[in-house]
Image (cartoon, rainbow, N blue to C red):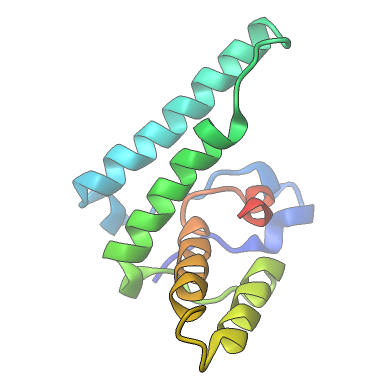
Length: 133
């Protein structure tokens, strides 16, 4: 199914952006949201390279675009997401949250969305960024 294991966090692959699965390129929303995310990252990197004092909000730009793409993938392509990664601490945390939310209808929708969004992020962010959300 998907790719994007977090096993590379300490072996030099932590910085490497994963190759997107072919099915993501077939979805115009996936392509648009992915390109928006990468554009914002390049723009922020360019601004801060020129002037380290540039004031920008990381959560509004980089993380915000990742959240939008992750939510789209969770909402639209849940059946195509990567399985849980046994080497990813955040996957384990999300699975624990799902167990805790069982029998709690007020908690379950948020727990499911957080879990699916995290699984989606394995498809499109480097391992070092998986812990951020």
